[in-house]
Image (cartoon, rainbow, N blue to C red):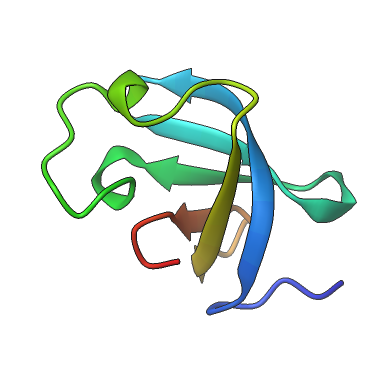
Length: 76
């Protein structure tokens, strides 16, 4: 599977931090959803929207030079 900007994927919330959530993607890849990309409203506590193990639909919004995948739930 090729990971490209704009692709829609299904993933599972692996872990949650105060700045975002790490999502397990197909092929054992991991991407991150920044807290600002979780919902279209202001998110004070990400745990109000996500929990570990939850299935989510995400959109790839950026892949940086180091190969890190940035994701968005609100754009999916």
